[in-house]
Amino acid sequence: MPHTTKKGRKPPPRGKTLGRRAKKEAPPPPPKEAPKQPGSDEWQQRFDKAGAAAKKVAVDLSGGFDKAFQKLRVEAEHMLKKGQHTRVRIKFRGKQIAELPVAVVAAAEIAGLWWAGPLRLLLGHVVGKAVLDVEFVSDSETHVVAGRSFLASGDLDDALKEFDRALAMDGKNAGAHLGRGIAFKLRGDKEQARRAFTLAEEYDPAGESGREARRHLDNL
Image 1: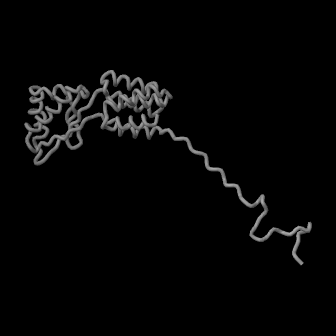
Image 2 (image 1 turned 180 degrees about the horizontal axis):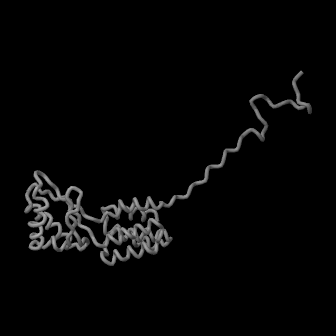
Image 3 (image 1 turned 90 degrees about the vertical axis):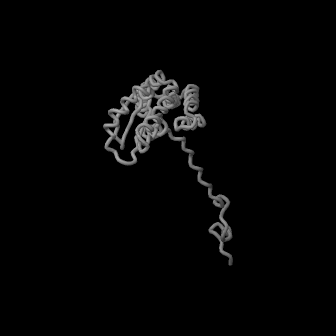
């Protein structure tokens, strides 16, 4: 006698389930996370990478002081004509030994006196190959650094003031334009941000500031 249920109905064949239970509903897909805004540490890391506006030159002393001085003077003349850098920092083995205006280093007569005097005394004992680390920097960088600090802490108004001061001294400072762009982007002002990023890329197309600006432009 075939087995029946209490109500006289036959049980469903093995391997089959009732219609209601035939298919389990698939779980809903997880919600997409909104893109995260960089935190203060990440902004600072990006700026440290993108804001290096100093031009660095290695001056080899092994060929003699006169030859090394000529190379440095030519670089200083070039920087003076571009007008983007105002001071020269000279380091030896990681220690800064001098900081002079670019105009002084570019002027052969004035710089020659300093080069032949104090520097020779400082490095006269060096034997063999020696290299001076020379950096051409801009006074405006002081304000760019301050602006980055304010930006990293979320103080957008003071950050913009510092970037504007930097640009008043050096209108082609790509790091300052980049900083303004990020500040305006965080404010939600896409039009102003786009203008600032465009200028940063224009003034530093092959550098970190320009590349960082391009990444922001692509994501606006």
